[in-house]
Length: 243
Image (tube, rainbow, N blue to C red; front, side):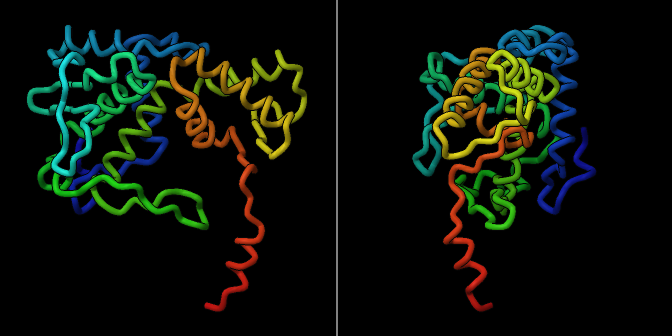
């Protein structure tokens, strides 16, 4: 992947499908069976193979310090020479695999990017605004886009789209759910929440990630339709406001 198709800041222009395909390409190179049946992605094994075959440095036994804004650095990617580092504090943390996958995403997607030219290092990573119409985050800076791409890659490689729908359907059949097979409609009803939590728990065990990772991934793929927080009053007030 080159940076020919990049924005004015040098950040690669990638669709979600571009990133999905890149994650699947990496998985296929190391273990094609991961895309055949629901199972854990052998991420540590992949990193070790990268170290062995391509001299990609890897270390998760050292503290990485903090940014100039005072935030703890949980993970770090080095492009020249190539390396992936995770803070020692995450060794037994549920976030470990996602952070590791996130840093691998930087290495795969951004290895040809001139980070200094993007202004990445001068931009603080903060919570981005949510667009009312789309429900998605407004990505404004080069850093926003770079981090979003790495996050999406992490989700795609840890919870492959090729198998997660299969895993959901298998669990629904086991639970004798007959409606909306392959999709989860989450509503403010006890049975709905209970069913979703049971499916979510199963996916956490299969993919070795945390519940939040599962929730975001299911929403990304349109499998989870969340109707828990529909604010009818807010919507009516929005349309009633004069422009």
